[in-house]
Image (cartoon, rainbow, N blue to C red; front, side):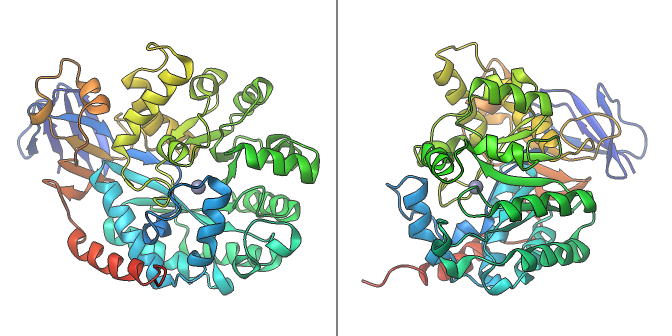
Length: 431
Ligand SMILES: [Zn+2]
């Protein structure tokens, strides 16, 4: 049966069938169609979140005045105590909040695998199936502990051989190429060895998987890389084969002009995380320059220990504000540019040509945004990007409702939050 989302203020009608978009524009209903009245609403493709750490829902509001390194060293020992059940509870809330804010595909970078217990990835995948959001599951890793000159305590790192074997096993158990897509993802230049980076890249390429890591987030990272390797972080990654079209990196703030051009020429993706970068005082990514150079740029919420909001729609406005402030140019970045980061840019980062826009033949990942409270706003995209934060009216992933009439279909958010709070409070310092 065909379903027609009818009468939207922008971009018009959208028809779907069998999980795919089949028509966009003026789509008169036919006999037998299901018609969803969207009069005055705004429709977009499902938003894509290109960088997140779902488990961080257990540690919101910690180290609020710290930069990245101080914040990480405060939190590593807390995160070391999380069980797979904790991570599943956090992932359910993360995905629920993302779904309600119009996200249909999310990348989760999970790099804490205490004791090598990789059932935590099954737990994240279970939460994704329950909420209904598509997940790009980045099997993260750290192998450079404090005693070897790394930032994380030795208790949270693994050895290279175990990481690689586990990555293959996680791929074999969970990867289906659509709803759960496994990615190979050593954590960051200051928590991994060059051997892990090189062997992870080789493994990913042998399995046909994409690669993800953090890069050029802070000046501390740059100083650490120069002190240890005599090279800037991106120079090092380039030497290790990581500046390439099958890679997307999180943050990507501190790049030289030459590095921006190289990222563009190689089509290496960047997950731009504007609120997290502000919260940690990390800097402002050169989004306009990166896009102009040809690099795919997506939008990321990042973990909620550095962005306590945890929803994707407000990041559209934050990205626009930051781009204009960075270039001191109100014409630097339009509402359409911001939406492109969260849709086509995100799809390019994740290497997907089947999502990211409302076009016939693509997956029916659709968000219906309520238009009633912004009916007075002249430009519908300005209403979506610059207007108030709100929940989506309907969200569909592959044609299936994940949010209907503003409510999650797969779970009760109040219950999920109650369970999460109990688990999070257990971690709080004792007076
Ligand atoms: Zn991150």
